[in-house]
Image (cartoon, rainbow, N blue to C red; front, side):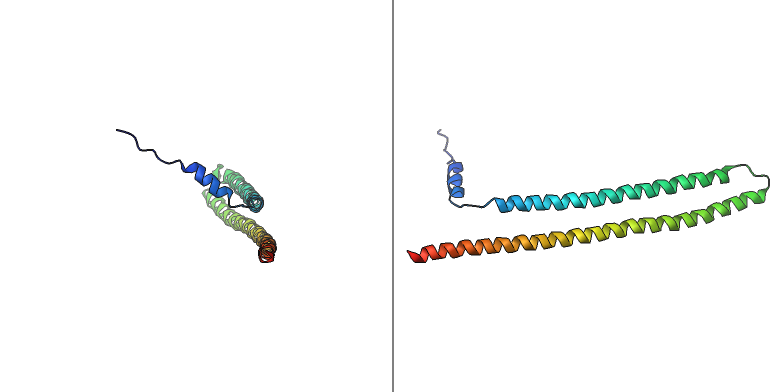
Length: 149
């Protein structure tokens, strides 16, 4: 039995796409703009992660240092109570300081993100305006040529 031949649409598609001229520079520019924004956003996120890690590490080191006093041998039973009370008090203070430090990091990330988004929005608006002006000029030119014939 003869096998049915499937038409090769590659040629047809290539010819069809060739008949529609497309300015790829706008796509290239959009990709470059998006990549630049993504790079800046990544930098913001990585900086925040680094600062958060430093804060956590400091808190851990301080806690371990304070545990040394709690774990040491005491002469009087009341000294153990005082040691635990002091530790709990210092932990509460460190927790408040650490949460404030994390809040500062979050606030900085938020401000930088808003600045980046505002800048990206402004740039996108400018690019869109330029593209519309260019398209308008091209259509006007084409219309004049068509009516001149």
